[in-house]
Image (cartoon, rainbow, N blue to C red; front, top):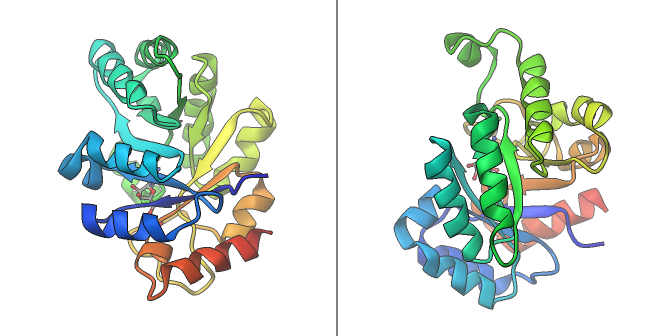
Length: 227
Ligand code: C5P
């Protein structure tokens, strides 16, 4: 079985590439987010691809259907393994994303973002959502109805989503923290082991690896924890 860990390379170009060169691609996949992609663009995808990594392009598209479709087509043509859009963009937007991905030579997995793991009850009340678990499940249902491959959600949301939408519907969970470690700006967190027990398919881990004094050792420890 391939590793379920996706390392979030929220670093500048040089640091991202230096770290990637040290990692064995069979130990994890890599996530390129807005920091790295905005500063370096498709070049970073090419470089990481050459090193043999599957790449999750985490740009969380959220726009009108026509614009999202064009962005998804461009991202798919880069040959990424997975990309994402915001589920709150609605059905028409998600359908446009699906169609655009499927029209590329090598369709990537297309994932819907539910609610960011950094947001807590108070943050969500501010934007008019009073029940996070119910809102996440509603968004996940919408993602599934529109034929996307799965969702980004918190580890605590996984069980309910799998129960409702089946084990093949993918769950990708950020907000992974070892017990007692710094939460940073994350809010709805869990340990790697608990996320796997809950049924998460892929764990997105950033700072606990990239900001560690020894990133390779930190990755090894996470792999050991979920073995
Ligand atoms: O450093 P940390 O482990 O908190 O990184 C989590 C990564 O997952 C970040 O790159 C962040 O952008 C991303 N992410 C998230 N919550 C989501 C979707 C993506 O934290 N809902």
